[in-house]
Length: 532
Image (cartoon, rainbow, N blue to C red; front, side):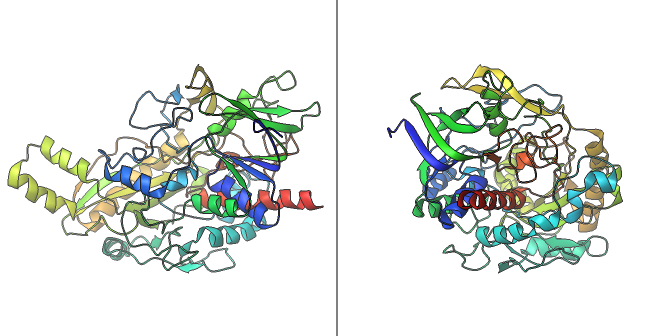
């Protein structure tokens, strides 16, 4: 077979945490004929680290990742970039199109959902229920934690049946200070992190570089490049710089091929028995919508016009606090501790659940720029900077967002460098989130007072948190969803979607652990069908 027409048992589109785990798990079980497609290039960790050293703005986590012309990504520093924004609120997300995906830069927080997160509509009368329950995902959560290498401590009342693979990382001085000061009113917990507390899976323990975003320089934090390379050793064929732009089906609507373009515009056809779309909640609906044909005039899996709808994130309110006493931030992981007592309960009937967390990073550039704008210079600037740098930290939040069909991804009328239509987003933040946000501000003010704040910045409104959920939503019926409980599209029996785009509810915690667990479940489903 020629190089412009390839074939495999399983074709996976996207090499982030979802796609790499599907490819690795299937290859580990003995399925050898697998092709892993990635739109962007394969890059070395040292190259990213070197780019980071040369960064002008260390707070722009995308700066160390050079944008490929054939696979552009959103850049939050540019108001008019790759994604066309048309909604009331800017979605303003960021993600990496390269081998390994966006787990090259993330905080590493690897939460499970709790049982009630799967029953939002039944229990609280809002949002949607999942067509599966926590117990069905539990064994895959356990495997996920072993594969990614999650360190943590068992919280009280946890539904989990097994300990974390590694003990939790130790609190920094800053986290310990916050925990002690807030103890009379709030319980500060250690977040589960895909960061090594000891040597694990041939990766070193975390040494506290404090730049997990934009990149862990030593590989102590998990990145999907780990499972890409494991999959390659098992015989999986990685095709980097291969941009999927069309899904081909036969007369029975069975997927038979993915059409891709190279950076030079060369076209290739990749045929297969099973197909897994494992990009994110923007790139997946874009590809499905691009795949219009006489058989599928609205695109693939989109007879009911649901592809691209129900876009969610975790809208966040963030503040910077300067204390009277030094707390010595800027060391350890970028995030270790959080308050989780508002993640569930009857509050969800009227307002969003939330996670409040504490960031150890200090934005030194922002701090110095602010002092210069205030008129400080010379030795006075130096002393003021030193004073603030050891007393300043960030407090942030994630708010649960309900699936709204008006929040959606569509195709714009503009194309990228190789002629593929760019995505367009319509997005707004609902009152359910705003009500919770008002309560969050009050709680942040109380927390700042309990900590002995000298200064606290005002919130500027909700910030995005790059947790792209919804857009190929899961459900029991083709009438109101795109995929079933196994993440298989209702319309195409050999097409699966491995992504947070399938999540019917967002909860208020980081989705990566759930993405990985769902992906392992997909691999299990495909394997059983291939060998039966």
